[in-house]
Image (tube, rainbow, N blue to C red):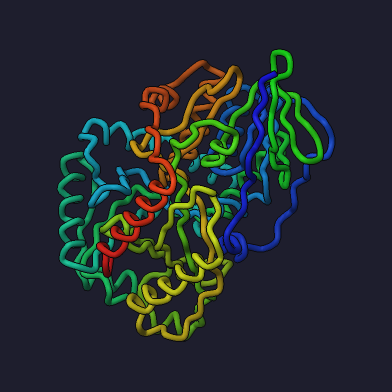
Length: 447
């Protein structure tokens, strides 16, 4: 009998700050009784929820069950920095451009915009306000001569691609951010900034009216049963025809892609709400978002809305093959966040960080996804390579189109990618990866 058992279940580091600042929500049920489904989706993040929505669009008669291990938006999707990016965004590169060539980048941009269009349609249908889903673009912000050069090089690449952008000087960046830290910026208009927990909550609430969604229902394993599968949770089971694994790095927990996926924890801190006096002192715009000119630098967002005016700092990373980071790691990252905040906002020395958290992402060494049919009737939409919102949405759309239509432009894109290569054995993988990450972060300096 073919059977796959989870070796571990998701565990989170720190509270999900994006979720904590929102108002309490209606809790969705836990799976308590045995049920049946045509398709069962494992994972309620961007990929899983997008797959459910796309499946329903393609064939509303399908009986779909989605199982989320924790609460919706408490997991990695709700811990995201909130950048839904359309342009090339190679985190291993010097300036995001990568080395795939112009035609490959144009294809990537076109696909990312399909995902953005899909998410935009939902946001408009559901009536999400700008504080949850804002098509405002983003800035690459530089703080050194090296960062300025990265921005100019990326601008040259965008010009060759025929993509719009605007270069900004130090004064213009200060008018936007209120910070004297940034020496230059590159604005690109295509990114959508989302409140990730708010978006995930809204999409889950919407899909719960159309399909069967269950939270706090971790999948502990699944086994072949006749022509279908039996999906097991602690309290009940789902007899299903097909399975979509949309659980990103935890795909490996079920025995797939062993030693081929890199599990990286990124850390973030978010301030308490700014007082009116602090808002006046800071100046600048009430909402803006910057990614660092050096991909291993510090991302910063200023948000405003029903949850108050706040600033988010995202930097520091660690290789975590167990898919779980320690509280000590989070505390260490928090100290770095405090220093990075004061570098950027020296006029706000008393603003306190209210939330700190870590969130897991999944990478492969060659940038390939873990996508496609893994066993008869078992499909994967995993390994988003640090671009969880755009690529997770895209993989969810693609796997749905693969199941219902037998393929699509999106599905073919991921199916044509080579297999992620194997990682070195432990402890070499952890030592090498963490040393490399530490070196890249040190090298990014003030960025």
